[in-house]
Amino acid sequence: MQTTQSRISNLALAVLGFVAAALVIAVLANARLPMLASPRSAFLALAIIGCVMCPLGMRIETYGWLNPFNVLGIVIGSLITLLILAVLLGIQLPWIADDRAAIIALAALMIVKVILAWIRAIVHHPSRATA
Image (spheres, rainbow, N blue to C red):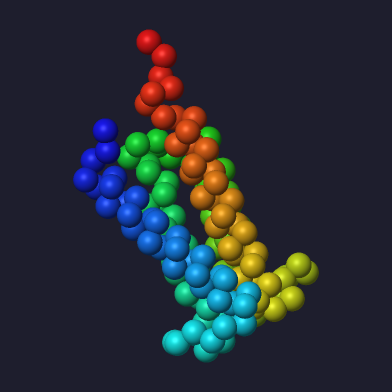
């Protein structure tokens, strides 16, 4: 049974996920967005959305820090943090040519984390418990 906090968390994750997806699609379509005049500002907005989504999706109180899916999520989150720092500090990465490529890399890593959370929810679903 879902708690009220869990339902609110799920709703927040869904809304943030849709906003993140719309942002990435807009960047890929070269659409101009109000307040996001450059790919750099779009990257920063996506990074902020991801940083808000991360603790909501980890569900530490339910799964714990040492859940293998959370540990893998932490590793991927660390890669995301390094990507964000590289972009902010202007460090050129071999596979990231520009801010648009950084947005694609960030979005891909975020998608991997979302997929991990879905798999974790399936694997650890209460109905799967055996008596």
